[in-house]
Structures are given as C-alpha cells and as structure tokens.
Length: 75
Length: 136
Picture 1 (cartoon, rainbow over the protein chains, first blue to last red):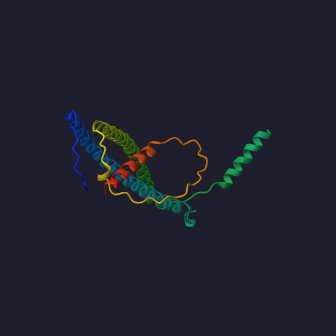
Picture 2: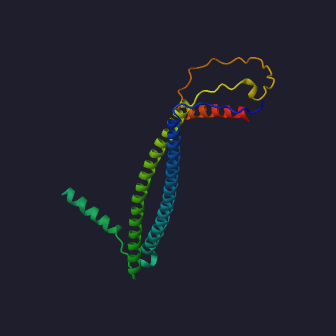
Picture 3: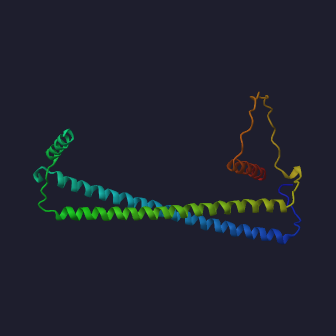
C-alpha cells in the first residue's frame, strides 16, 4: 500500500486560490515588518551606545573642572 | 533687637565659609564647560531620537501582530475550505504494540487555568506535529 495518492475535490477552487495568494502576500508583508523592527532595534542600540559615550565624556569634563577649581595651588 | 543680632551672627558665620579660588588661566575651563554643555545637548537630542525610535517600534509591533492574526485567520479559512479526508488504516504506518501501563492515580484536578493566546498556538502546533509524525 505504502503512500497512496489521495485526490480531493475542491469546490469553488477560485476562493482557495485567492486565499493562498492573500496568505503569500501577508507573509511577505510580515517579513518586511520584521526587517524594519530589526533595523529599528539596531538603531536604538547604537543611539544608546552614543548616549553612553557622550555621558562618559561629560563626566570626564566635569571631573576636570572640579579638579581645576579645588586644586590647593588655586586657593 | 534679638532678631537683628541673629542675622549679624549668620552673616559672620557665612563670611567664615567663603573662600576664593584663583583661576590663572580660565580659558580651558570655559572651553570644558562649553564642551560639556554641548555634549549634554547632544545627549538630549539623542534621547528625543530614541523616543521616536521606540514609538516606531511599537507601531511596527502592532502592525506585526495584526499581520500574524490575519495569517492565522486565513489559515483557518483555508482549513475549513478544504475537505476532511478519512485516510484508510492500511495507508497509515503499522501500529507498534502498545505496552499496557498500570493506571496512575491522578490527583484531583483543579479548575483548568484560562488558556492564553500562546497556549492555544502551542496546542495547535502539537496537533500539527502529531499529524506530521504520522506521515513520517
């Protein structure tokens, strides 16, 4: 017997064809949306990295200013 | 009179805490201050950009959710359009002898917890995997 071929009668075949095409389009749209989400996540993490390095720079500058103001020879 | 004496005392106290710092070369400090201010403004700009990115992320996630729901409902429609096939038993893989296990006393079942969307999807996946393993 093994794997017997099965024939099925599909009524209103046009309907299923449309549904399958609609499904294909939706899957493509989903792929595009996922790609945009990936790109946005990448942008977000790079902005956060930029932010971190800016704040580190500011911190260094503030340390420099406070050292200049509070050095003994300045008094 | 008592009040006037108090304020004089406070002023004298304040004068003791005052000190002057000589800045021989104030230009580098000014530059550092300006650069820090510039960096702080850049950081605030980045924060606004981040807010925009996060809003767009939320919008895209909502879009994705709708698309997945549309795919799921289309799949259900296709399933309902296709006829149900009764495959004869001979075509299915031969049955293996099932070992009878002693019945296990099941503890009293509590009211089943409400199924979430994720649980429903997992149940469907299990059903499909079961069907697929029958063909392999």
